Length: 258
Image 1 (spheres, rainbow, N blue to C red):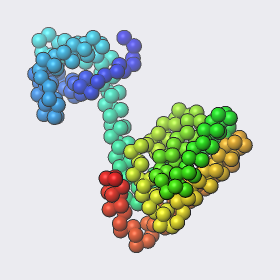
Image 2: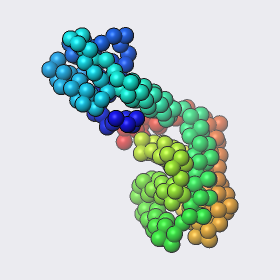
Image 3: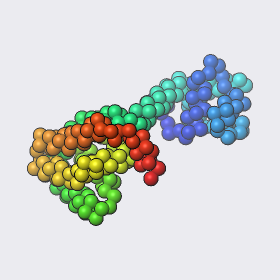
Image 4: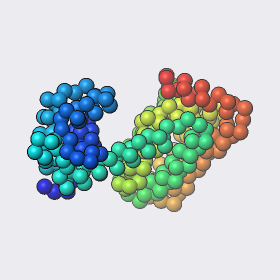
């Protein structure tokens, strides 16, 4: 058995976590009760079958009639899964944006990550990559001109740049700060920039970014992306200092429901 964590379903992961937390062997009856107390409708027989699968993975081993204990490989896997769950919960809390200050933190994080992505994209982009960005630009411009929802195509523009950059680490950070769950915040930004009559400024700013990538000019691409996101940061800062900030909670709630 190698040291990798096998692909487990949620029930298998939860059962493995129960054994990890236990001071001794865990039987199907005890594990089933704990799973049901946690809200999972599961029978003792099903728990026994899950234990058998964990045995087959080499993660648990029978301890006579007392239940199961973890193998050394199982303990390492259970600890890795527990650490992953903690990280996912921390990410979820961090990206549960509720205040203007948190929105500004997100935009600052985007600026730090995306300026690097734009620079890398300029050094790696193929002609096909540039053509894809230009296609997104035209779609963005058409949607704004027709007064249609352009948020998705705008986000796609930033995601494509992240893909072109070809960095696993920066790409993972981009996936976090450009996650689909943050679309409601794009609606909030539209309201804020709409109040300043600057919604349409994103298109010419994106044009500058693409022009730098087309020229394969990393420094210019980084600068253009930084200007784009700095403008959004400045607009949100202006909003935060205005009387309108009092409606932020209601605005966020409305956009999440729509």
